[in-house]
Image (cartoon, rainbow, N blue to C red; front, side):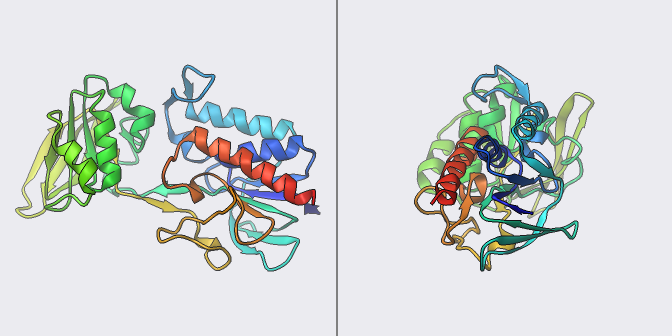
Length: 304
């Protein structure tokens, strides 16, 4: 079977694209990847999704998946490992050794956060360890939080958290911040924010309720210390899931796929949506909107 569209990725962008394509009566397959529903499934309560005062990330993505299926999407719980965009129909090979052919493709593989790799990080992921201050800062009202990182992303996270938390402690591995002056100066001037330089986070500890403290190491003296905290925000960068597309599509200096005229790529019939092409906004709502845009662009392409 040759599908009208194959959607690679099943986060808010991919599933929204799937809903629109299937409702338009285009045969649609969604390759869900290693984590059906994407990163949002690891989030606890989502309180900035329009129309829901509060909803669990897992529940939100299950609802979107069910809606996509109800409208006719075929869901395949496999990952794309290879693509051939040299001719139509396009060909996608999966890790289950399946070959998918489609007249168009929407890429919505997203990005993944760089992890610290320390003990306790995975155990408390979503229960005190977070990566999105915009999403989770309200949960830390009048509490103490740690931000790991020294670049612009870490400064933005710390600045936003300071509107809610009593104390924000930045752990910077280097002796100086790498962030640019405007946001760095703003953080340095905030009395609620403290910066620990030459400091490595070695371990995250807690109890059944969440994170309670972290173990730090000075990278110069190698002395260790314990620091009480209610949460840890990891802001050491993102990795776009673009590896299998780099030989076919244009990427920017950071590895994100480059789009033009909204969601179009350099190959007619191949579109992008969500964080795979967005390293600025990175919100579920913006990704869903881009999924809608990609679907509409794709429909226009198929109808020509």
